[in-house]
Length: 198
Image (cartoon, rainbow, N blue to C red; front, side):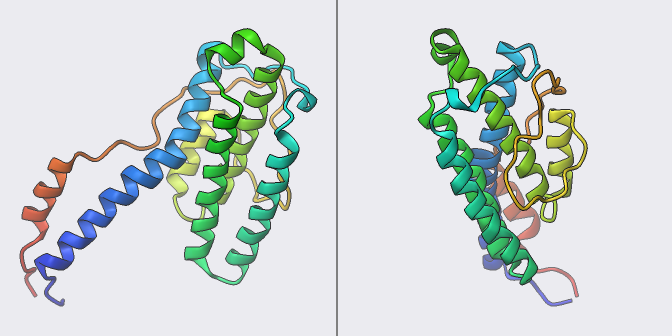
């Protein structure tokens, strides 16, 4: 076994922490947990009746996600796995943007309930799509999302559709990822940074 330099270990540890905190946690984890917690607290965990006409941003979201989904499928079929993962992260980021541009919060729920219902239902369906496209990379996380949604595994579709219907009850909301404290970097550096025995 080749000796691993402490400098290489340090780079790998820092990269892992950055990817976890700034991408998985802030992007994917934030989107899933923010929306699922909102459904649990405001809707008692039940997907409301909705009309997409009450969410003017939906057609643009659908168009954007379908374009990204097409790219994702092409990436995966061409075995460009890194590009596929990057595209999956872009779809999750688009979900976060969707929540931001529609200002999903207590005010939306109280002042524009019809719009809130539509945003919630559309967002939950996007999370369901995300559970399928992340499965090749983080299958356990995908299973956790399915458990949160209380839904079976979804085959990767060609189009983004609203398959989670009104009346569906989601499951228990759990955090997908935990922030890694900078103190862990020092601990891992000292634990794994030395030269490994051959």
